[in-house]
Image (cartoon, rainbow, N blue to C red):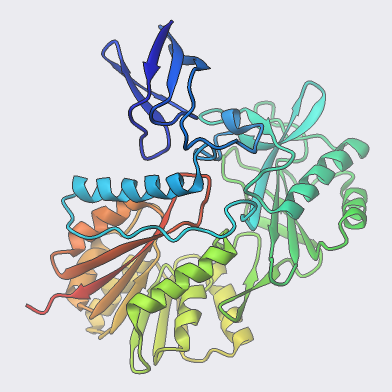
Length: 439
């Protein structure tokens, strides 16, 4: 046994400890705290926390130590924001990117903000459990009331577990490939109060489905649509290719920035509706669009950013590789009466190369890429097209700063504005304006 003092927390919220020429990371600790540890051949284990940091707060979730879904719940919210800002500052230093990282815009509702949840179902010691995978394992941690997920969605999952037992419907066993229920996804709009429930099974064969759905609707009459999705692959991907609408329209609608959007089972949509409006208003603030602008919205999803911009510019060109998202985007434009936007189902990189061939003139480009960031060919195409402005939205600071460094050859990098969309976790969204260098 040894007593050590925590002197460093990494950007994922873990304490970094060097002991006997080895480096370890430990969860749920803060700088200045003293802990008693046991160092064995299998690693470093915290036996007891001897002192508490003044910045420590009571953890609301009883599964915090095992779940891994939240990494920062033991920190005060102020300290969470400071850590996220520091993460980006360190990355800028790593990539030698000269820019200013502003204080993060925090959330007014740092709990129960997630409008989408997806739970994995398992049988454990004769009981049906539903929850998230324990970090770095495929063991499901049973969760009855997740503190960052929508409260109504939590209640629906709990009801589902009870009804499975009532109707003798078994969870899926991924090793034996037996059982019925793999996952259940719930999406809920705070604005419209509409709820979509997606039940994922390994086969179209679903004995007891009708009785389960009937009882679920009785228990939760506010559910507006239920979809049966079939995923027969041996994969960690939640949704399969085939979906059947059991009741309702097969989707819900949400209102964002005064516009209405269709959200289906596979629709990508920001999980924090309140902070999404903060994020998009930040985009408008830094871009300062005008009515003569032609703007490209790359990685457009269902067109939320493009349609938000449509009120302020001449034309929006939206490109998105997912064909289902493009179909929904077209419907969304029709629902909202937006006529100055066009949608293209194509990989963003390929579309940019096409625009280069066409010698297209763009006033601004908005990008909101996946965590992998921008493809190098996309970056090269931007530097050829030379739009006057570019706004980069990113949920991955590492790839953001990497890409900004590449783009800094042609663009002046503005302040990075973090927006906290993912309270209690180390994740952070960012917005930054890039302005074309004239010389």
